[in-house]
Length: 329
Image 1 (cartoon, rainbow, N blue to C red):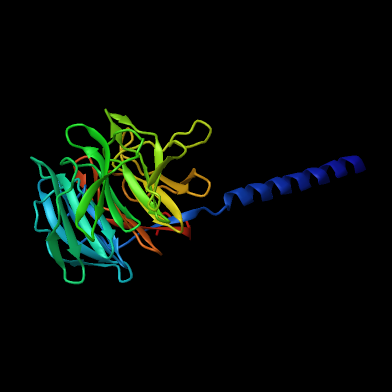
Image 2 (cartoon, helix red, strand yellow; image 1 turned 90 degrees about the vertical axis):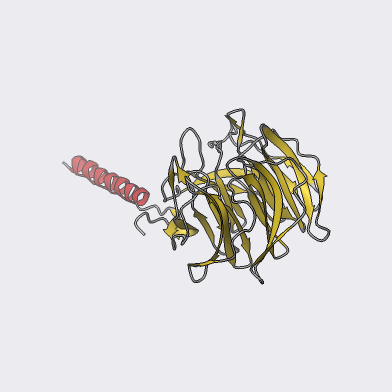
């Protein structure tokens, strides 16, 4: 009888430990929260262009399913509201590129429904005015990428009738272009790029209908491209293969979300440049989409706009990586 009681006692203790372990697993906190912010005041659209100047975000152009657009809007991240600014005076378009350089916004290339474009423009937020600059040096194209590092602007890749891999450097002091050599990656369109610590990270996109898996970093100081770990590394549990996705940066990390990958996606991948590794964060909580844009501020990041098939979005979502995940907020 005593032995039986001892066995029952040990069994009770074992069940209690199992219960605590299961409870601990159930209560494990997942970090990374999406919070819906003020929706865009203009027309819902995809394939627009965004850039950040100081503490303001700017969104220009795009396509709404019927018309190519040329309006410009400013987003105030602290007040969470939108202000209409001076319309872009060039040809309305989608699939263009843009970047911030020395306090100004730069915008060019794209497609107007009939023609591929190579014009290039500067936006001055202090005067709310646009100025046409020297045309982009490369072939007219859309679906390219644009970024700035080391006080120079860059545009490359895209589609001019076939996929491209060329890059060109822009000097705002002289309003001149020169070809930038050294990119050893594949041709592609609809790729994405993000900038961390004066380095531009480039990946994804399509070539001949296939997703590109090579991933590169460009050092703005040395002007050297270096290949990093592929986006579907066989030794790791991830596959960041897509086109028409969007990237943003926050707290020294790069993020990639949405896009088209055998259907529109809501996956969120986070990249650590120190370890050259990817990990999965909580999915984007808006509707799955492609052709969205983003704002990367020093303390906040947003994903907005885009399309799913013929449906176009005007919502705006902030990602808070250090906040507990809550799908109901």
